[in-house]
Image 1: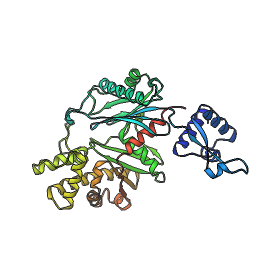
Image 2 (image 1 turned 60 degrees about the vertical axis):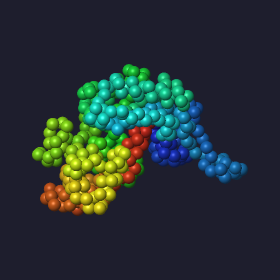
Image 3 (image 1 turned 90 degrees about the horizontal axis):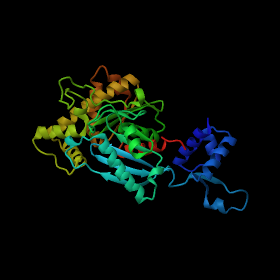
Length: 389
């Protein structure tokens, strides 16, 4: 292991919590001489500092006080952006994962018209990124990296976005555009990949799982032996247009029966409104989903029928992946997860009634992740893992 890799390994461990040199040696596998050299370099660069393990230890007069190493706050500042159909968050962070400040930009357009030129979005990111840097006295030209998590078919290694509802262009390098305009390194991530990354951190004992992120769109993450499965060039898997029913609901792509047309919040809300002829009450989709949950509990038939169809489609999706990969843990996350108590029995019934998926149902461990901010946390983690110290 080189000193550079060793430095990043030490920084990554200290990002979780302060550690002693003994703990760092045990967790990194570095020999004492290498670890001493690395930690001294990081201390000299004021990226890491020594602190007493306990106040009582610091006051002890016998022997040398026991110390821990921790990251110095405010160092290695970066910008990470969460870009979706709902809006844009531009977030200023340091290498401890602390959020120094953020800007929220809402799209003043109907959702069907939220389609932008790539250069237009880069200009918005630059404008709000510079504003945050000014507010927090960070030189814009000293940013370590700028990252963007967004939706669509994304080659995460090269930064190419092949297709996305948000962009007018197709098959273009969004990371290169950001680097040219902002003058610092850039990386692009899929939002679902960020969500799965944080789930791996939160549930580190579970090495194999499928994560379904149910929001405006539907995303998937598959973790096998602690590694998130990706396609060529780091392409995140997409199930949006995986066909569930050949003659099913019409999709904007021109096909019928795509999974997205059953399990996203926009699909569920639209189908209920079409069925009842009424607008679902609520200031936003979150309030509408809560209302839907209440109506299903109270036995409102049109609401139940639509939610049941969503559950059957989820059963189909889950059956495919758990059977192929022999994965038993499946996590539902995102806003639609509020319907989990209604969806779960339908999902299990769908699996049990299918000869192809009955085996999967017998071993399935299905649960709901209630924290909808996981994509943000995962993005912050990925941002600070994307540059060399």
